[in-house]
Image 1 (tube, rainbow, N blue to C red):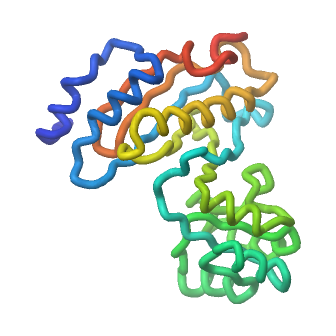
Image 2: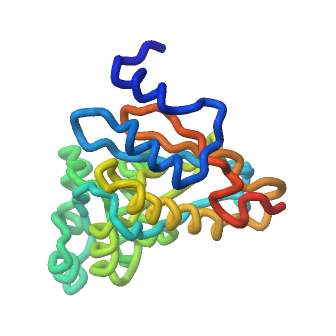
Length: 236
């Protein structure tokens, strides 16, 4: 695979065989962000679980202390007082049957997070094939199906992210922008890793965190020492 000049220059800063301490890896990630735009810093965590088994699923949500640096557009499925509360909390799109019809009929998808009041899930369930593949289906585990829609909107705006295993047992999550600097990124990184470690399934055996890689949008991968990212990472 051919890379551009900027990528190759950034790659020279990274020792491929080295497992970096988290703080050093984050410093390096900031240095390798050479694009003209503010690159997102992402973390990719491979876990010692098997996502094919229900008792080894790892999924949840966490509010990053410094946010994601991204403006989040929130859609809320709610009626009456819930709808009013969602709008007051800053939700850009609030609706019920009308919103479902707009998504189904017009392909409307101009939002980043979808939240639903519990009494709306019978209606929202019709959108499973549309929202599910995009990772937008409201879920109690992610805190996006909740009677307190206003709180959910506030958290989404503040930088709440959802983490979940993919089919290859890897979690992919943004932890902020390169412009945050290593310290703020470190706070977000630690918050996410603590949540993932706490979510360790009882059925997981052997090393839980198998590998951890940091990368900016356009930059090279930086390997993080998995034994330094959580006390549960080396437990059986």
